[in-house]
Image (cartoon, rainbow, N blue to C red; front, side):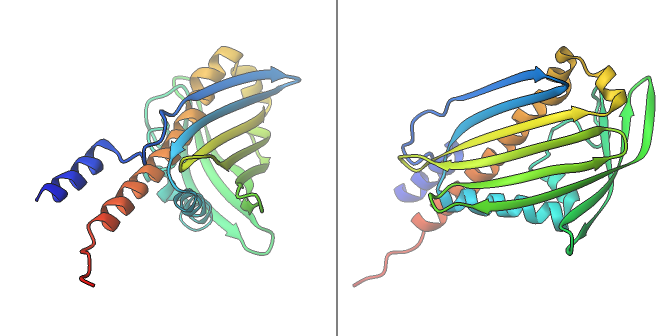
Length: 225
Protein backbone atom coordinates (compact mmCIF):
# COMPACT_ATOMS: atom_id res chain seq x y z
CA UNK A 1 0.00 0.00 0.00
CA UNK A 2 2.83 2.39 0.89
CA UNK A 3 4.52 1.72 -2.46
CA UNK A 4 1.26 2.33 -4.34
CA UNK A 5 0.80 5.69 -2.61
CA UNK A 6 4.37 6.61 -3.47
CA UNK A 7 3.82 5.91 -7.18
CA UNK A 8 0.61 7.97 -7.19
CA UNK A 9 2.46 10.83 -5.51
CA UNK A 10 5.17 10.75 -8.18
CA UNK A 11 2.52 10.76 -10.93
CA UNK A 12 0.59 13.68 -9.45
CA UNK A 13 3.56 15.89 -8.70
CA UNK A 14 5.45 15.05 -11.89
CA UNK A 15 8.39 12.70 -11.68
CA UNK A 16 11.56 14.60 -12.49
CA UNK A 17 14.24 11.97 -12.09
CA UNK A 18 15.98 14.17 -9.50
CA UNK A 19 16.84 16.70 -12.21
CA UNK A 20 17.70 20.28 -11.46
CA UNK A 21 15.06 22.97 -11.82
CA UNK A 22 14.59 23.78 -15.52
CA UNK A 23 15.31 27.32 -16.71
CA UNK A 24 14.16 28.91 -19.93
CA UNK A 25 14.79 32.01 -22.00
CA UNK A 26 13.27 33.63 -25.08
CA UNK A 27 14.60 36.35 -27.36
CA UNK A 28 13.47 37.93 -30.63
CA UNK A 29 15.48 40.14 -32.96
CA UNK A 30 14.37 41.91 -36.14
CA UNK A 31 16.70 42.48 -39.05
CA UNK A 32 16.18 43.16 -42.77
CA UNK A 33 12.50 42.20 -42.67
CA UNK A 34 13.02 38.95 -40.76
CA UNK A 35 11.83 38.19 -37.24
CA UNK A 36 14.12 35.67 -35.53
CA UNK A 37 13.04 34.07 -32.26
CA UNK A 38 15.17 31.82 -30.08
CA UNK A 39 13.63 29.94 -27.17
CA UNK A 40 15.14 27.22 -25.04
CA UNK A 41 14.21 25.23 -21.98
CA UNK A 42 15.39 22.13 -20.17
CA UNK A 43 13.25 19.10 -19.62
CA UNK A 44 13.75 16.18 -17.29
CA UNK A 45 13.02 13.27 -19.61
CA UNK A 46 14.97 10.50 -21.28
CA UNK A 47 16.36 10.92 -24.76
CA UNK A 48 14.15 8.04 -25.92
CA UNK A 49 10.99 9.76 -24.68
CA UNK A 50 12.05 12.99 -26.36
CA UNK A 51 12.84 11.13 -29.59
CA UNK A 52 9.46 9.39 -29.54
CA UNK A 53 7.62 12.68 -29.09
CA UNK A 54 9.52 14.38 -31.93
CA UNK A 55 8.73 11.39 -34.17
CA UNK A 56 5.09 11.74 -33.15
CA UNK A 57 5.21 15.44 -34.10
CA UNK A 58 6.48 14.72 -37.62
CA UNK A 59 4.10 11.81 -38.16
CA UNK A 60 1.08 13.84 -37.04
CA UNK A 61 2.07 16.71 -39.33
CA UNK A 62 2.21 14.37 -42.31
CA UNK A 63 -0.69 12.04 -41.57
CA UNK A 64 -3.03 13.64 -39.01
CA UNK A 65 -2.39 17.40 -38.81
CA UNK A 66 -5.73 18.00 -37.11
CA UNK A 67 -4.52 15.98 -34.13
CA UNK A 68 -1.77 18.54 -33.49
CA UNK A 69 -4.41 20.84 -32.02
CA UNK A 70 -4.91 18.27 -29.26
CA UNK A 71 -1.33 18.54 -28.00
CA UNK A 72 1.49 20.34 -29.88
CA UNK A 73 -0.74 23.26 -30.96
CA UNK A 74 -3.02 23.14 -27.91
CA UNK A 75 -4.03 26.55 -26.48
CA UNK A 76 -2.15 28.48 -29.15
CA UNK A 77 -5.12 30.70 -29.96
CA UNK A 78 -5.97 28.83 -33.13
CA UNK A 79 -9.13 27.21 -34.45
CA UNK A 80 -11.66 30.01 -33.82
CA UNK A 81 -10.33 31.07 -30.43
CA UNK A 82 -10.26 34.77 -29.60
CA UNK A 83 -7.04 36.45 -30.67
CA UNK A 84 -5.70 39.24 -32.85
CA UNK A 85 -5.14 36.77 -35.66
CA UNK A 86 -7.05 33.49 -35.90
CA UNK A 87 -5.80 30.67 -38.11
CA UNK A 88 -8.37 28.02 -39.02
CA UNK A 89 -7.00 24.76 -40.37
CA UNK A 90 -9.11 23.42 -43.26
CA UNK A 91 -7.20 20.66 -45.02
CA UNK A 92 -3.80 19.14 -45.57
CA UNK A 93 -2.27 16.68 -48.01
CA UNK A 94 1.23 15.23 -47.92
CA UNK A 95 3.03 14.40 -51.18
CA UNK A 96 5.26 11.41 -50.46
CA UNK A 97 7.26 11.90 -53.67
CA UNK A 98 8.28 15.51 -53.04
CA UNK A 99 8.02 15.51 -49.26
CA UNK A 100 5.88 18.65 -49.46
CA UNK A 101 2.76 19.04 -47.33
CA UNK A 102 0.11 21.23 -48.95
CA UNK A 103 -2.10 22.98 -46.39
CA UNK A 104 -5.14 25.22 -46.72
CA UNK A 105 -6.16 27.70 -44.01
CA UNK A 106 -8.50 30.58 -43.36
CA UNK A 107 -6.85 33.58 -41.70
CA UNK A 108 -9.15 35.84 -39.72
CA UNK A 109 -8.16 39.31 -38.58
CA UNK A 110 -11.06 40.11 -36.20
CA UNK A 111 -13.03 43.29 -36.99
CA UNK A 112 -11.04 43.74 -40.20
CA UNK A 113 -11.15 40.95 -42.79
CA UNK A 114 -10.94 37.21 -43.45
CA UNK A 115 -8.59 35.64 -45.97
CA UNK A 116 -10.05 32.35 -47.17
CA UNK A 117 -8.26 29.30 -48.54
CA UNK A 118 -4.73 30.53 -47.96
CA UNK A 119 -2.32 27.92 -49.33
CA UNK A 120 0.82 26.99 -47.45
CA UNK A 121 3.44 24.47 -48.62
CA UNK A 122 5.90 23.11 -46.09
CA UNK A 123 8.56 20.44 -45.80
CA UNK A 124 8.81 18.84 -42.37
CA UNK A 125 11.34 16.22 -41.38
CA UNK A 126 13.66 14.98 -38.67
CA UNK A 127 17.42 14.45 -38.64
CA UNK A 128 19.33 12.39 -36.08
CA UNK A 129 23.01 13.07 -35.39
CA UNK A 130 25.71 10.71 -34.17
CA UNK A 131 26.31 12.79 -31.02
CA UNK A 132 22.78 12.03 -29.79
CA UNK A 133 21.20 15.28 -30.91
CA UNK A 134 18.18 15.37 -33.18
CA UNK A 135 16.44 18.17 -35.05
CA UNK A 136 12.90 18.61 -36.40
CA UNK A 137 12.76 21.13 -39.25
CA UNK A 138 9.71 22.85 -40.72
CA UNK A 139 10.49 24.82 -43.85
CA UNK A 140 7.62 26.86 -45.31
CA UNK A 141 8.54 27.20 -48.95
CA UNK A 142 5.35 28.83 -50.22
CA UNK A 143 2.42 30.81 -48.85
CA UNK A 144 -0.10 32.65 -50.98
CA UNK A 145 -0.45 35.45 -48.45
CA UNK A 146 0.69 34.88 -44.88
CA UNK A 147 4.45 34.43 -45.30
CA UNK A 148 7.17 34.94 -47.85
CA UNK A 149 9.13 32.19 -46.16
CA UNK A 150 9.75 30.75 -42.73
CA UNK A 151 12.06 28.22 -41.17
CA UNK A 152 11.49 26.63 -37.77
CA UNK A 153 13.69 24.10 -36.01
CA UNK A 154 13.28 22.17 -32.78
CA UNK A 155 16.64 20.82 -31.64
CA UNK A 156 16.98 18.24 -28.88
CA UNK A 157 20.35 18.26 -27.12
CA UNK A 158 21.06 15.57 -24.48
CA UNK A 159 22.35 16.89 -21.14
CA UNK A 160 23.60 15.34 -17.94
CA UNK A 161 21.33 13.85 -15.27
CA UNK A 162 18.62 12.60 -17.64
CA UNK A 163 17.92 16.09 -19.00
CA UNK A 164 17.27 17.31 -22.54
CA UNK A 165 17.71 20.87 -23.81
CA UNK A 166 14.96 21.91 -26.21
CA UNK A 167 15.96 24.75 -28.51
CA UNK A 168 13.37 26.31 -30.82
CA UNK A 169 14.53 28.72 -33.53
CA UNK A 170 12.08 30.44 -35.85
CA UNK A 171 12.87 32.83 -38.72
CA UNK A 172 9.87 34.49 -40.38
CA UNK A 173 9.58 36.90 -43.30
CA UNK A 174 5.93 37.92 -43.64
CA UNK A 175 3.99 38.54 -46.83
CA UNK A 176 3.11 42.06 -47.93
CA UNK A 177 -0.04 42.50 -45.84
CA UNK A 178 1.25 41.05 -42.60
CA UNK A 179 4.57 42.81 -43.07
CA UNK A 180 2.60 46.06 -42.70
CA UNK A 181 0.27 44.74 -40.02
CA UNK A 182 2.75 43.08 -37.66
CA UNK A 183 4.96 45.51 -35.80
CA UNK A 184 7.68 44.38 -33.39
CA UNK A 185 5.29 44.86 -30.48
CA UNK A 186 2.47 43.02 -32.21
CA UNK A 187 4.83 40.19 -33.14
CA UNK A 188 5.34 39.48 -29.44
CA UNK A 189 1.60 39.37 -28.79
CA UNK A 190 0.78 37.29 -31.88
CA UNK A 191 3.78 35.08 -32.65
CA UNK A 192 6.42 35.01 -29.92
CA UNK A 193 4.21 33.66 -27.14
CA UNK A 194 2.95 30.93 -29.51
CA UNK A 195 6.53 29.77 -30.12
CA UNK A 196 7.04 29.59 -26.37
CA UNK A 197 3.75 27.78 -25.80
CA UNK A 198 4.43 25.28 -28.60
CA UNK A 199 7.77 24.34 -27.03
CA UNK A 200 6.13 24.02 -23.62
CA UNK A 201 3.48 21.75 -25.14
CA UNK A 202 6.25 19.49 -26.42
CA UNK A 203 7.71 19.50 -22.93
CA UNK A 204 4.33 18.63 -21.38
CA UNK A 205 3.89 15.66 -23.73
CA UNK A 206 7.35 14.39 -22.81
CA UNK A 207 6.68 14.71 -19.09
CA UNK A 208 3.35 12.89 -19.40
CA UNK A 209 5.04 10.02 -21.17
CA UNK A 210 7.96 10.04 -18.73
CA UNK A 211 5.59 9.90 -15.75
CA UNK A 212 3.54 7.11 -17.34
CA UNK A 213 6.69 5.12 -18.07
CA UNK A 214 7.95 5.59 -14.52
CA UNK A 215 4.68 4.46 -12.94
CA UNK A 216 4.42 1.51 -15.34
CA UNK A 217 7.98 0.35 -14.64
CA UNK A 218 7.82 0.76 -10.88
CA UNK A 219 4.41 -0.90 -10.67
CA UNK A 220 5.58 -4.15 -12.22
CA UNK A 221 5.61 -6.99 -9.68
CA UNK A 222 9.03 -8.27 -8.70
CA UNK A 223 9.48 -11.93 -9.63
CA UNK A 224 10.70 -14.31 -6.96
CA UNK A 225 14.12 -15.73 -7.74
